[in-house]
Length: 396
Image 1 (cartoon, rainbow, N blue to C red):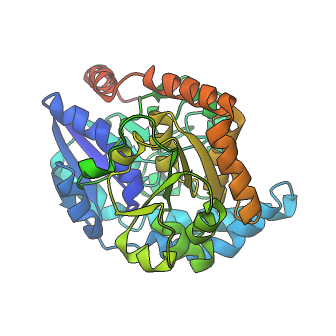
Image 2: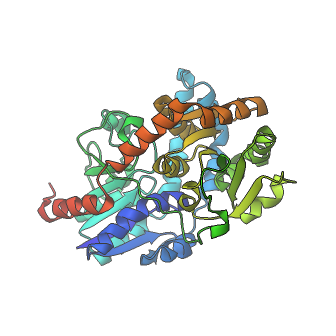
């Protein structure tokens, strides 16, 4: 069987899709990842073959353009007057996501996949599946309404959602994805539709070296907190959203070890550091977390999932709506604390960190959430089920 994997140019989105794509290949299927040229090194280093198509689209720049509208809607989500702003934001995202639609369609026609697996933000994959008459499978990367009860009505209300299908003569009704694969623990998501398939989140955080043995913690030792911060949020909002220096100041004086996992380009922004702080240059995050007791981060879904898998209490400090959603769900589970960037002064950060380390209910909730994640079907099982679906699928 041939599986075409269509991914958006957000590296962390591809990281979440990669384990299922790799499971198809491990089962003996042909797998081809299709993405814009800037993704070539990242994808090939993950061990999967790739075809580059189209031109590079800077999604961070697109989000900068929609930032004022997103923040306005985030501040007053209940205000009906924001509906038009939401439509404008979706329209700009739709245009960017579909910029390489024609090249993806051309490649799909030439390669003739039996199944298409598409990142949520890569709708050309689902358009190609519809035209070819093969199963189109959406893969989520975080909290999302896709694959949830009522999602079809939401899709129908999005302006222009079906236009790319109609441009190819396709009469699509309802959800164009046959199934939606979801790596998020079910308790953190809206109620599912019958089309949602759960998959166990398996960490993949890019190529990199594991921290050396000198950083392994023997015995109990002092509590250890990991600090990490995605690069995208600072690129979108600006340096004011890079809060790690504030977090380090807030934790100063606590009898703990602090591991800072960031890109080397951000090291200078940290300034002078206390003696209990170690900085690691872009390690695969899951290889750091097993030796930690808690984590502070920016509320990105990939980081949340890594920390759930490690059974850690989490402090998520969010600035954008997608971060708000997953962070609020995490806090509702009891396994974490959510602060908006506006709330996160040093006093609030320090109090949250102390609670993560000292409140046994946080540990209990984190253990429960980890057990829920590990109870979901593995990527290998989901790949087998989707293979069976593809062999029996008849396109209407």
